[in-house]
Amino acid sequence: MGWKRMIAAIAVTAATVALAAPEARSQTLADTLVAAYRNSNLLEQNRALLRAADEDVVQARAALLPVVNFIAGASASERQTRIAGLPTQTGRSSQISARVAAEMTLFDFGRGAAGVEVARAQVLALRSGLIGVEQSVLLRAIAAFVEMRTATQVIGLRQSNTRLIEQELRAARERFELGDSTRTDVAIAEARLAAARSALAAAEGDLEIAREEFRLAVGRAPEQLSALPALPRMPSSLDAAQATARANHPAIAQAQHQVRAAELQSDIARRQRFGTVRGEVSAGISDGRAQETTRRGTTTDINAGITYNVPIYSGGRLPSTERQAIAQQQGQSFALHQTVAEIQQDVASNWSRLAVARARLEASDQQIEASRAAFEAVRAEAELGARTTLDVLNAEQELLDAQFARIEASAALQFASYALLESTGMLTVGALNLGIPTYDVEAYSSAFSPAARTPSVQGQRLEAIMGRYGN
Image (cartoon, rainbow, N blue to C red):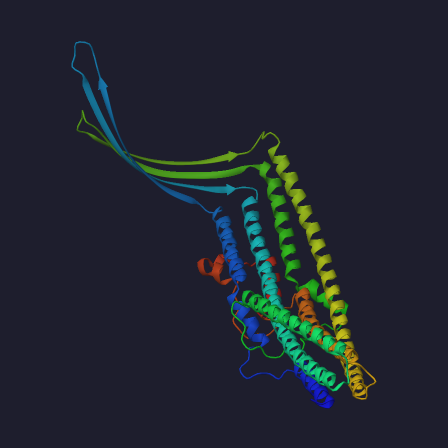
């Protein structure tokens, strides 16, 4: 095979790898994200935990309402009386009773209402956490998609490289038989072919690993994947990206709700020392009869009372509880500051990675162009006897390395773009406009109690956040 035909084959291979044509009915990145969202066990787990937290709100509200119990009972007794000289006397009696008792906290100095707000704040924190889990699931699916595409492209390039080296080896052997080259040239080509086959086997293994990661991240095996779409719209500047993160990132919103819950817990602990006023009302009826008499007795009673229970001495438990709650509140406040700092740092890091990936992609394009020109020149010089087989193989390897660099740079650019969106809190189904129904975080709580919806300030803030996500 002539040098020009080999050069043309390399050029066609590079163009095919760099600009893969979309296949008919292929799986797009959007299809992958939809499947990951619908199939995620992690999302289902956290949705169940959110529903459990919704029940905490109901239970906290129930603590402020009366508790009514129905109590029924039956009893029987036997009594024997022995008197010297007289027969033993036996007496039996039975009684059936029923009672309805109601008790209610009348006044607890605001602890019950604060407990409801604590439960609501924790629900809001879990809702924000669910958004964070959604972002993680989608980002992992994107990484799996990009890795599959990269592994497929690498295999195509490795296969082409192996075929070209096989052609080089045949040409070297032919020249050796004609006396135009040495046995060393043949050995060098054979060694390069063995290395190329080894690299191809490794690439095929990497593809199998990527396929299993895709199955785990998306919930199903990959199909024929389409080309990566155009990059998503990015913030105009680093400051704009960090501002978006401060306003939208679910981890920050979650930390804010946790701070609010800790503040309320501290307030509850402080008010424990004030005691509790409780009211009780009960009404009952009992029916009894003694064997020694034929008379039946029915008794009806109604009781009502109010009790005030205030701790006088608790061995230091109440002051300790209050100090503990204050320390936990301070800890949550510092956790919020740390979360904001970490998010800001993550945004800055991803911004830098994005800039580096763009520069790498541009440099790799230039490297491919220069390496291809050098390879063509070396091959032409080899035809004139001015270059050896080793020179040709080295030039070909440099072109191959440049093509690999471009594949890696393109993958890095794609992932860095979506990682930046994730760090700003905008990698959600709504923000990406995937066009599918999303999980309604209020449907469960509103189904069993309209009052369980969250009209609080925290709830309004969450609704504003969810509105920005399009949910």
